[in-house]
Each structure stands twice: as C-alpha cells, then as structure tokens.
Image (cartoon, rainbow, N blue to C red; front, side, top):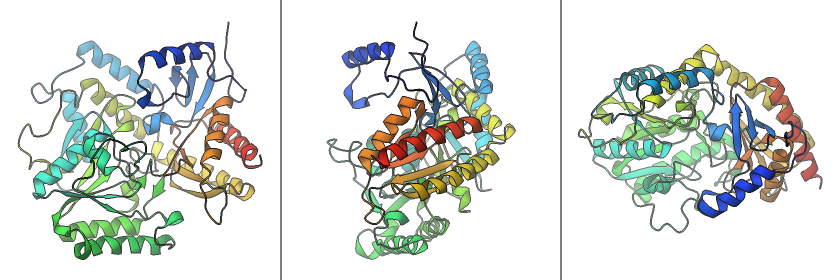
Length: 447
C-alpha cells in the first residue's frame, strides 16, 4: 500500500494513482487548461494531500482563494447548513437573506462613507466586466484605461484589459477595442529607466499627456488598476502613484476601479490593499478568497454609478449563490475573529527578514517586493542586466514540489515567485517551506 511521502521527503510526482489520472485526463480534458502539478485528494489549513498520499505545504492558496485556509471549519459548517435548506435561487427573482446580509457587510468594510451598492457575481472576470459596463453606462463614455502587465481575467473584455499576450490573448482575434494602455510603475524594470518615486511620477505624467497625444481623458469611462499587480509579477504601486491616478480620474470624471480580487481580504495586512494608499475607489472588486473556496465575486460601488444601469442590465444565473454568500460571511468573520490582518503583517515581516538573508547569499534573487503576506521574489541570471531566470525558476518550482512545497511563479517572464500561503499557516510550516525553497534555490543557482 502506497502511503505517500511527508513534507521534505523526495517523492515521485505523480505517483501510481496520479499517473493513472494523467492518462485519463489526457483522454478527456482540453489541453488549453494546462497541465496539473498534482491531483488533490484532500486539504486542510495550509496542507494538501495528493491521491498518492503525498503531503504538501501549500504556498499557492488556489491563487489566493484560501486566505482563511482550506476547508475552514466555520465556512464548511455554514455551507452544510445552507445546503440543507436550498442551494440555488435566481437572485433577481427570488433573493435570499444571505445575499442582503453580505451586501450590507461589504458596504461596511470597504473604503468610503458615501452611499454604496453591491452586486454579486461568480468570478473575478465577471466582476471586472460588470464594473466596466456600469462605468460606461454611468459616464456615457466607452474607453477604459488599463495598465501594462495587468491581469483582469480571460473573458472577452477582461482579456482585453489583461496585458500579457501569451497565453491569455494569443490567437483570439481583436481584444483591445476601447482599451487605452498605460505604463505601471514597475520600479525594478521601469520603462523610463527611473527609480521608485521618479518612475511613478513619470508614469503619471505620461497618463496626463494622453490628453494631448493619443486619447482625450474626457473620453475615458474608467481606469482599472490592481494596487499590487498579481499575474504581472506581484508589483506594488507606490501610494503616491495611486493617489495621483485618483486625482486624474477625479479631474476628468473617470470612474476609478480598484481590482482587489487577488490583493483583498487581508492578504496585505489590511482588508483591502488600496487602503495602504488612503485612496477611496469609486468601485471595488472582490473575488477569490471572498467565497472561501466557493464561487463568488462582488462589485461594490458608489450608489449613483451602480444604479445608473437599468434593472436587469447587470446580473447572471448563479450570481449570489446562497451557499457562496454564507461562506463569504464566515470568511469575513474568520478574518476578524482570528486576527488575520495582523497575522498577514506579522508573517510578511518574518518572510521578508528571511528573504533579505537569502538575497545576500544568492545572486539569482534580483528583487524582493510586496506588502504583508503578498510577496514577490524576482529571479535573474545577472543582477546588472536583470536577464530573467525563467528556466531556473521553473526548475526551482519543480524541486520544491518534489520535496513537498507547492509554490508558483508569475510575471511577464515567469520568473517571479509569488508567495500566497494561507494566512492561517503555522509558523512551523512557514519555516519548513522556506527551508525547502532556499535549498532548491541554492542547488539551481550553483548548478
């Protein structure tokens, strides 16, 4: 009987059962989905077990969908209780109380005191699409300002807002109609070869210049920004940049959309990453960890913006599913009761301290950045040229998986490790994960 390997032990990935599932998958699942690293059998907290019994520390959280941990007890029990009652209604016709309760809660915990309204959908991409639709309806304008390296989803409009061509946009035809692209203040690779605040200042200046050179600012309905770019490379926008962008929006009647889908719900040490800048967005988007592993997204915006659309103009069959709504209420409760905002900040400090030591040892580490427990580590072959260490990053990731640590990369060159472990992770697992990761980095960088 195969009992699997514990964390830190070498294992064959996949094992016998996993190999069988690989064969079955190849016979029935489209290749566009991508190849899985493991086949999951169960998960709890910050641990995952595969179908061969191998145990892993999870530093991926389903791409930040499990801030409160896999199978959080409060979430699971609430969902069970709701499923005993009913598991689906069409909210525009037969709304349930959990929808209203969640909307009330989101209004309370999002920035700003102006009257707000909430609409619930299924995915982050749906939230993005509907926020843009609301902004276009409210302003009577069509153009949308988005940023280089942004990721906002894979549906038609969201795919256009997303910057990375391969694999997200390649071969799908025209996707960017009505989308105006601006540079994001990525100081490590500043397009204007400037550092930190100077880079942010220049990026803002170029946006203002659009009014004279390419796109009238009064033709733009909305600007959408991730306070920390996710897929783009875990790049935080300096507070002064976010503030400057909001000023431009206010000056020209542009709706400011905060995409907090990956950065929200405690990940950065605050409930929403936008709070680090003090900016109050016109619309805030949430998804991923909001449902505690269930399908749910939210658009929270100023009343006059969301109410500008005619009844029925925004919606969907499954938006605001009752089980997802009660799960979200328990997620918000867990964040508060378990002190996960403070814990995210504390974990972030621990990791940052360890990373500074690692950077002094391994030249392959080019940049360390982030807020709270949302940290990016960019690997390069040469610190002077900043040549991306793409192949090395892939090899390090594979070696980590073999030893029981699940960690994933992102960025334009797939050379940025993104740390997104559940905020409930035990410090022992955090330390063991750091040891595995550091060993793999040392092996590959000295190979």
